[in-house]
Length: 557
Image: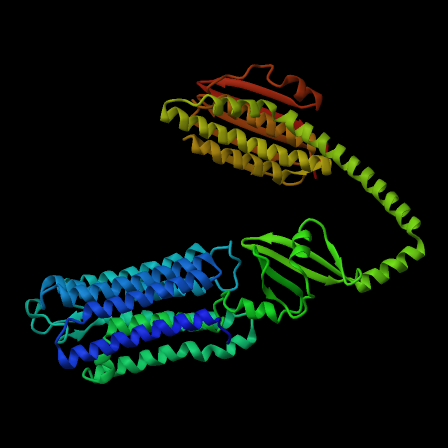
């Protein structure tokens, strides 16, 4: 267990501040000649801010730093509440009682933040934990609110003499109090299990005993508090002070044994590294240098930033890179590389160059063919969806000033976007294979109808049959469907679609009630005729009937 000298000094100062606070309490208890609560608060506040500085300096993951920093601030809030209660509020008053109840906000939420911190172990810095863990705020809030509302039910603390004569020394613990204690115990046990399981270094797992020492002290204190309130440990440290120390000591132990990742002792790690590297500051002083690093000068390090430098008669390669506050440099022994290069040169450099040129030409030809195929495919897709893209562009470039009209325009844009996406997918399938599964056509219609439903239009879709369709047949059916749907928006109030596919035919029937536009009899006449299909459109009582019949001749299955 290695820690930097600064870490050891600051941790020692924090412990001494806590011990000084206990000594001040003993002096005040036995002599009572001065007000000691404010002094104790200052000691604990100073210790907490030192710990916050430690967290910001040593912890690698930003979320862990944030959680534990908030935890430290809540400890300060806890000590502030206690100081206000005993220094500025009358004993037995309503405000003093609620200041006491407020203790349980930092007490309960600190442990939850500590639990959230260990969940980041083994995860990348840019990958947050699942949001489902935030559900743990619910039981924590319920426990806290239950204690804050104790005056209404007295299920956390029961006062035998009533609220008017309450005392923080004469009460009986109730259900909510024991639930809060159990919740804290469960979270502490969970923290130990998580750090033990997720620790990537087996050697660090053997040090799990160290963070258990503060927990053991907490158990000893709790037993003494329950059975001997006049004991020395209870007189020296009151419950809020002791618990703040235990919370911080527990997390610090996890950090110190590297069960929680930290950047402490990086200098020792650097010095014993097997690589040849070092760090030089802007003044030319080498601050860190591994044992495997060869002697280098300031001028060599600065020059190696632009071009690699060869040392030791070309046997060592030196490179450097500018970093914040100086330069990082590294060396590499290239003796073996030089020997292999000489052998390769003797075996035939010309042959290697020719092979490289042939390989490059082959790859270039392959890439050219691939690019041409992709460009053709993208051109086909762009050409097919150009009307829809223009329509979306018009909707975006000229938004309506009316919120209702704007909302309808955006819903209509969603319908068009779904068609563009699905049609593009089908075109990709068509270019890879001449057949498209009928299920893909069904999924495309289903997704489009889902967005139609957002426009407040009643939708019904019925699908029968399964098999493989020629690509042009599936694309034509989907285009007919989209044209009918777009012509009906926004006035239409109901649409019924029936898709029937067999080995002999494809039949797409659409009924559109109260459409915005009535399709002409020559609607898509040329495209339908080109594949031997028939398309009929009729209008009766404000209902438009569109039927596409496409003979397949046994090719769909």
